[in-house]
Length: 191
Image 1 (cartoon, rainbow, N blue to C red):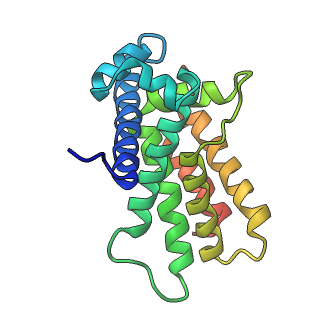
Image 2: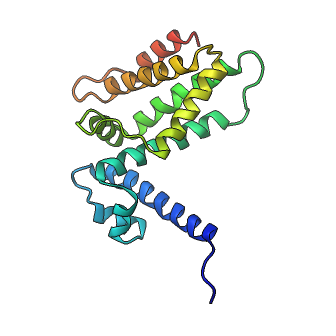
């Protein structure tokens, strides 16, 4: 039996990592952060517990990567959904889709998103990871399609506005209705 090629090994690593990220989304979204152990995540993913530590330095980093992956996949699906916008208003349609994708994700996964936002506000803060970079790329491309002349300034502003909108949706005991927040963002971007 010959050894596996480097490309086969890389694909196996990619799949293992994605299973861990998906298991994290599923378990934390259902049971919460504190009730989910790294062992639970490894079992759900069908991998060894040690593999979690191989890919991620801790549970907080794993959670942020998992949520950023979910956000990236959700946003990508929304932006690529048929019919693909064309013409002079394509950028506005893509911006509307991006806003709706992130707000919809928050509506559909409140425990997961609340946990994610709380983690960002801890001492560890915002963690850069490949999943976050893919999400950032999509949002940056969205502001470019929208017509930004300064995407380096406009992308961080869009990110901040989306994060700022997610918080009042998740605020226990005093949530702001999603339609109101959506209308504010749509007004801001003249959608």
